[in-house]
Length: 429
Image (cartoon, rainbow, N blue to C red; front, side, top):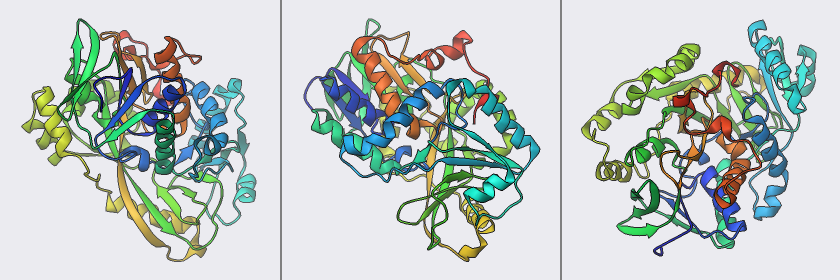
């Protein structure tokens, strides 16, 4: 792996790989370390929506930039990752939900997002085959979708072509900090010097950072996705309905997921930070099932936050697939059949689980840690990371390379919770 690098990135998801690409374009010597394969984690398990629609206002400038990048990325990265730009539609079956959509529409009009308020008749025109009693909805024609795993790997390959070093199957032993400055990392028994280390480790970020005395407010939510084969075109528009969200791949299969149906497997992080997450939980308590069991027992066996214990836990979890919830999978499929009864009994191609790392305000944590020079956060994207990934990589690369970014990253600053600078979660889609 060589004994040094300008920047070491921990994590081979969409954020880490897009950042590696952007840094390599700037001739920065970058080394990316990934415990599993590239895109093994949430970046290959995401739904694939690339949306400006229903973003928190703080994310919209970055997301608008990302939305302008996506249409040309396939050519720039020399890869096909099924980019499709036919818009995203969100549908309401109650006045309460439609009122939320109208509020978001009014709050974000200043950003110039091309979003349309829909009537029931408009919805029928956009998808005549979809059954249901709708009050209305919103449609953003400039949004799209892509295949997450393929896109993430395309960023990694493009970064390598520009000189970035990417190493998979590498477990980080710890981060070396001396005098309040990052000095390097230990990985697979080797010491690698670097003055900048980026934590893009997703759900493992909090545990990694705790080994150097940093506290990240993080909670993990497990979601289930189902792929079915309806054997005909359903819609080119990715769609959220109250019962199921879906998008159809160019090959014909359809991804199904339930936006408000996740599993929270309680671990020590959830217990440590419970006070920060109570407001968000109370607001969305019908969207989660709280599971207390194996995950918590596993953590209690290694309660001491040392590098050695972290590495053992980190290494033991390599290659483990998050378990999908079979009940959620069934609800997805039944909801889809109710929407499109003419599909009959669509065959299930596969079902999988993914683990989303979330913060108390569901916004990412981006920027240098105030406590440790050279330690940069790039995590906490709360299920919004895939679509925004290209612009997040660009913003972080600018910050690392020159000390400033064209984007205002203040809303995502790492110390915002402790300083009281945080956002109202009711504005989040």
